Image 1: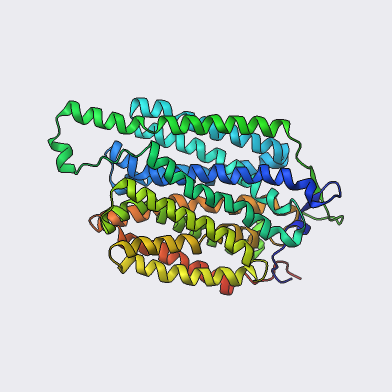
Image 2: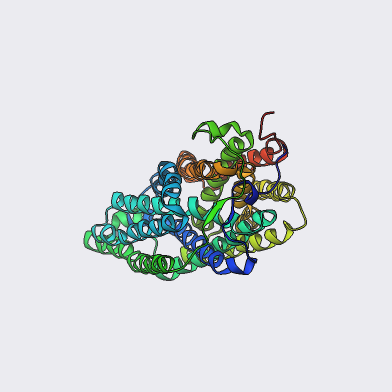
Length: 434
């Protein structure tokens, strides 16, 4: 059986027949989750340079912010899949929102004590909540409607994740970043009392945004509790033997999609985590202006999602994504070897072209899994561990290159090359051995 871009008829369909309008409100609610976890992830791009300054970290230490969040994905992916099977999509979403909110509120004691380890723990808790949400919402968005439009539906929902990529840097610039930067020499020469006051002020600025975020999450959880979401049941009637958690990897397209997703998430996190730093060092921008350009990057990312979703109606998903991948490789080379503001433009272009990679790879990986979709979804979410490992490697490389931020972008370049190989060679495989 050749890989096709269908999900819904291979797993679940609405328990009751009806028009797509019946599922409009549930789809809108699910889409709101994509925006919320997009806010969390894109605020990390602000936190990395901010806490690097507030907690006096090097590049490698600052990437532990990414490691904390994405390590949670790896650890929680299997329990999240089990949670869905035990309690269903709706209850799992509510649990995910409450865990997410708990992590957001932990930013208050972390800021009050100026403890970097507590910040990391708070981010780990947030990551656990995000894992539950993504493991629930991605397949639910895919199966909430006609199977032939599953990829379009998933990309449409993910477009609001792109909206968050534009909004989060603006929020971070207004409420988190102070615009005050000092060189190590200036910090060393600063009177101790003034230095402590500066660091305390930098740490405290994160409290209000995360209190607001946690409050919104609680309100959304309450809304989900009182709203009706369509129950889902299997469409197929034949007896199907479910493979175990590791046995599902016999679907080779899923195995390679997991690897491709590992590299994609690693590339995306690498690019955004060091965006402000490369804007400061490569283009000579201050941190608030750099955050403004990060917001433009988010706008291009969002635009890419909407435009990509439109083109997916006319172009096969793996063909469109292959074109986008080639463009990302070229722009990554410009980011490495270019100078001045052109580097920022290249990174903005990458944001546009990698916009549909996650949902499309996710969709390709779930093809043909039927009742094993939850297990496959867990594997694809576990692959997000790439966001914990590759940025740490990039930070280490940058430190080894004496803070040469551009040199570190060779890591996302390699990632895009593998994704291109997956799309051209590895995705079109037999999913069932006859």
